[in-house]
Length: 157
Image 1 (cartoon, rainbow, N blue to C red):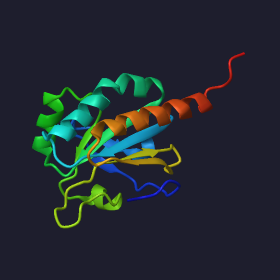
Image 2 (cartoon, helix red, strand yellow; image 1 turned 90 degrees about the vertical axis):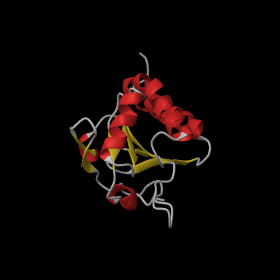
Image 3 (cartoon, helix red, strand yellow; image 1 turned 90 degrees about the horizontal axis):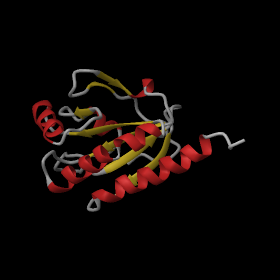
Image 4 (cartoon, rainbow, N blue to C red; image 1 turned 45 degrees about the horizontal axis):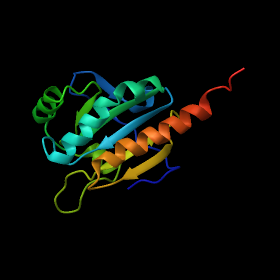
């Protein structure tokens, strides 16, 4: 797992919507990059729905979000469509992004449940890892973004 302060590896992949997702082009306050093991499993579904339900709040704070798993493209598309996910999702079947972010479980080769918050400078600003508490990722991300948003906002006159 990568650490806070390290440089985030570039992500340049086509998302399930057919659009190219390039991490370094995201800009804004930060980008939330969350990895999950398998589409259509209970906790992965919960996590995707929680980020979906808070997508507007995250976007209004100036952050973007992307979900990544080792599922194939077709499965990832069905998952996003079934759960009406409004943010990009990437099927990392070749595991290149998961390897670069050091999130793969040894031996079984699927992604661990790790969420990175990446600053526009490509520096890792926060790391959250709650393997069996999917809701904690959303809670931690919202707290972090809200604190960062308040710090970035100019004081009221």
